[in-house]
Length: 259
Image 1 (cartoon, rainbow, N blue to C red):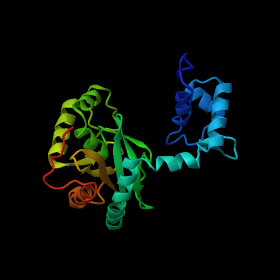
Image 2 (cartoon, rainbow, N blue to C red):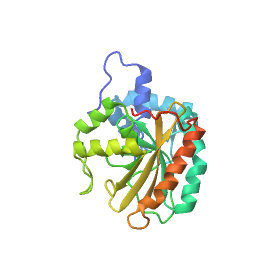
Image 3 (tube, rainbow, N blue to C red):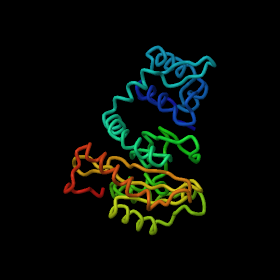
Image 4 (cartoon, rainbow, N blue to C red):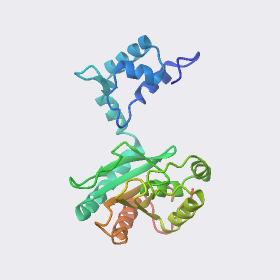
C-alpha cells in the first residue's frame, strides 16, 4: 500500500507523487488510480490534480482520464543533460539507422536502471520490451551493462548483491560471471549481449563520455539474432559513440573514469 498523507508531508511532495505516478505503460490514469498509487485521500488527490491540470502540468482527456500535459513535457525537454545528449547524438543515430535499419537507442543511468532517451526503429525491426522513456535492467541489457560497468562501486555491489531477474535461459545472473563481464566492458568500452533480455535480440553497445572522461550515456544497436554479425556492427557503433563523446568535449588522452 502506498504511503498515506503522513504528518509534515509538504504539498510539493504530494504534487510530485502525483506527477511521478505516470510511467511507460501507464500514460493515462484515472483520478481513482492516482489516489490509489499515491495513497492520498480522494478529495486531496482531486484538488491537487485539478490544480495541476489548470497549470498545464496535466491534461484531462475526453474519456475523463489524466495524462502528462504539454507544459510539463516542454519543461522536461529543457533538462541540460538529456537535451544536449539527444541533440548531439541524433545525427550519429540516424547514420547508424540508415546503414543498418535496426533499432538504435541512447540510454542513461537513473537509479538502478537504464532509461531510454531516444530510439530510432525500422518498421520491420523485431519487437522490444521497452520504449522511449522506458527502463531497462542493468545486468542483462547492452546499454545497462555499459552503464553499470562504469558506475560507482557502491552501485555495482548493490546490483550484484540484489535479486538479478532471469528473463530467459540466456540471462546471466551469476554475480561472479557478471563481474567478469563488467570488467571486460570497462576494458573495451563495449558490450555484446545475446538474447539475455529478449530472446532473439542481440545488443551491441558502447559508452559515451563527457569532457571529464565520465561515462554519461550508452549507445546501442539491437538486431535480430542471426540477421547481422554483431562483430561486423561493433566498429560502427564504437565510432558513433566516440563521435558523440567528442561533441561532449571528450578527446583521446582524457582518462575514462571507471566509476
